[in-house]
Amino acid sequence: MVLITQSAFAQKYESNWESINSRPTPEWFEDIKFGIFIHWGVYSVPAWAPANEDIGVYAKYSEWYWWRINEDSKAGKMFRDYHNNMYGKDFLYQDFAGDFKAEHWDPVQWADVFKRSGAKYVMLTSKHHEGFTLWPSAQSWNWNSVDIGPHRDICGDLSKAVKDAGLQMGFYYSLYEWYNPTYRNNLEKYVDNHMIPQMKDLVTRYEPDFLWTDGEWDHPSEKWKSTEFLAWLFNESPVKENICINDRWGKETRGKLGGYFTTEYGHVYGDVDDINQVAHPWEECRGIGTSFGYNQVEDLNNYLSSKACIDLLIEKVSGGGNLLLDIGPTADGRIPVIQQQRLLDIGAWLDINGEAIFGTRKWEGAENNKQDNVYFTKKGTDLYVHCTKFPEKSIEIKGINGLSKVSMLGVDGNVKFKKSGKTIKIVVPSLSPVTNPSEHAWVFKIENTL
Picture 1 (spheres, rainbow, N blue to C red):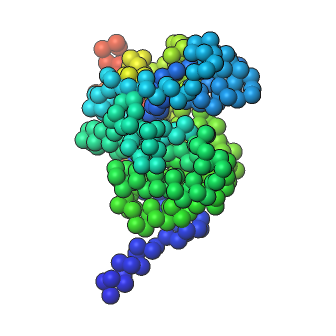
Picture 2: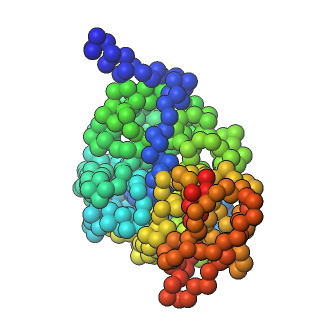
């Protein structure tokens, strides 16, 4: 009987979307709120895209360098002209791999920066669309970080450092590869002998908390055999109980099928008009600048300020989502100082206000309390009021039941308020440079009101 029960449990999920979608995203995903995305690979060597040109958001991604230099488009011409002028027409993209050396890379230092940023999880591009893997994949012989370039198992070394720091670790994985001849000529063979074995290897070798797929748009999920793989992931893999997945499993799946929904630079997919109205786990991903991979020509105007990063985190969390904020390290393994500074500023803000972010949920009453620069989160019976601009007058909030007290996070003592029926007015305190807890955003806590 024990064997039968265990067998039945092991076959809980079938290889169809109805069954796969019946598995809920683990609840802890909605608690952790803030993660760090990392785009790092051969594209980090040329590290270039026309950041200041009017060519659309996606054409500014430096990690698409190999594709763009071969593309017949306005953006493609810019990339190609740059490449030919800088390296010459006969210089192949593959030749950049030897210069992706990561000679200054310290995974423990990276993990320390991530932890100090306040992030709870990390997502590394194990393989982008160029096909170069950051682990010794048997399917990518001589096109991986152990055989060439760094000569290191980047996935393994970073996974250990991140987990040792107490953070959760995941991997981005591109289903397709631009110029893989098997992919271009025999999709089924590519899926069976290359893609699925690589994903299973990633999962069994490193036991990640996330598998974040991308590059799904060429084919429907049936061609990718996505449900077959996910049935294995949820039934048999060593992380079957806790792993989180996203929604990029076929050209028809974004915003519809799979795990949590993913928006990108604010772009919403599927049939979703307003991600804030979706009663489903979701996550916004974007870079601090205009690109995911490092772009050496981005200037200060291309980067979000620390305040803008914090405001973005508040906006996404108050809407019920997570923020996966990307960094693009240099080819030699350094996180650019300006990116470190942004992360540490977020961390300093979270040191004071983290309780209003982590473990919180969207407040249904926010719809009736729309105000400029004011956002809401809730946790248990407490309501948090986030002000991305310091309020110049009292804050009026409707739909408040009983309450015990109001305070500002990071400031000693209670905050005065006036209550009339189910409406309260928070009397904004006067703060001096000594007592002001933040230069970016301020949070009021209303206790025992929900």
